[in-house]
Amino acid sequence: MASTFHNLNVHVIWSTKERVPWVTQDIEQRVWEYIAGVARQKRMTPICIGGCDDHVHALLRLPANLDTSKAIQLIKGSSSKWIHEVFPHLRAFRWQDGFGAFSVAQSGIPAVFKYIKNQRAHHRKKTFQEEYVEFLIKNEIDFDEDHLWD
Image (cartoon, rainbow, N blue to C red):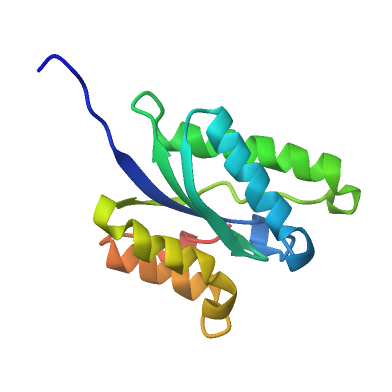
């Protein structure tokens, strides 16, 4: 085959350190837009960015030469630095070290997009921890809940 074709869509979830509710409604849109901007700058395609006070959902299309860990490291590092600079009252802000990443077929994008856009309504019924464990179980990922949270 003379050409390489690539379409890797990934739904990535990460939280604030110790799930502190730093990303409040008054700043969340700016944070989501900044994260999307970092993704674009690093040659990712941000399909949908959202979340709640204590976590982020990012639906991204990754380029062939960027692995998921590096992509999230770039986003988390840049956005953390930006949050410290733009919101001086959030100097103690931190992202958690880890993340969850789940592949998304092209046909699944509309459902994941809708899910991310409805996070506030969704979390009136379920905590982030409950949601995250459900993602791990649904994706058949082995985990030890005693060592799941930082």
